[in-house]
Length: 265
Image 1 (cartoon, helix red, strand yellow):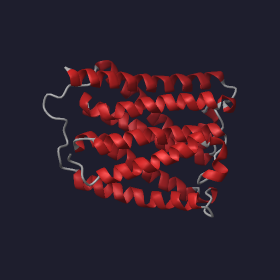
Image 2: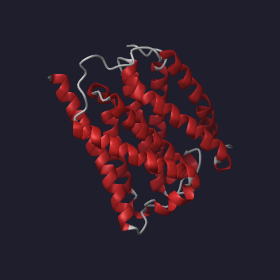
Image 3: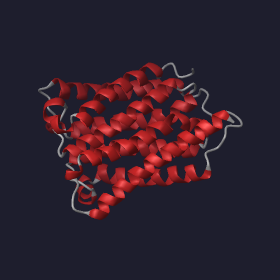
Image 4: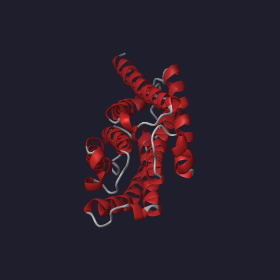
């Protein structure tokens, strides 16, 4: 294992992501009592919980990666997510319940996370940054799907982060500026994961992230199924969102199958 500076950080953050994911996904109707801020409608909470659930799988994959090369496509996006969430928290601090343990813990966690990740990344840079000679490339279809999905998510994240009111007009359900930006931070992170995997173009490096990618799509679809009453009346927006989540799940599943087949050959 060649990422000792980051491994304990990834394991710790994976545990926190699991807790946040459970609170948000299972407790989507109770965020006023059991989360750092009140998230409405519940579909927004469940969608954010789906991101944390995928982050749990992603961080575990990074922690278990045998090389910095395998952890790198996860480490940088996680740093971006943590840094942006800290900025969003400070911008919307009045929306957080700072009289509760949940609000205080959220703020402290995102103050600590970016510098911890940055120090770990700086220590690992210059290590074994490549997949190794002869590494099998991504199948052409998988690479194209990741590139296209990454580009779409990058554009959506930019809109959600920089123009949350405009994003709310296009989104399938009602978004507040805070929720738009929180979802946008995770969307940006997933986009960066996809695009970094495309850049590295090594199937072995996608093995650890493919399962998390699949989980993200499936959890988002489950969130919509459980809270479909929160969807708006725009059938096109609803259909496009559901189709895109399905595409994410299918791309991840394709990656899992391709990586397993490659490891057996």
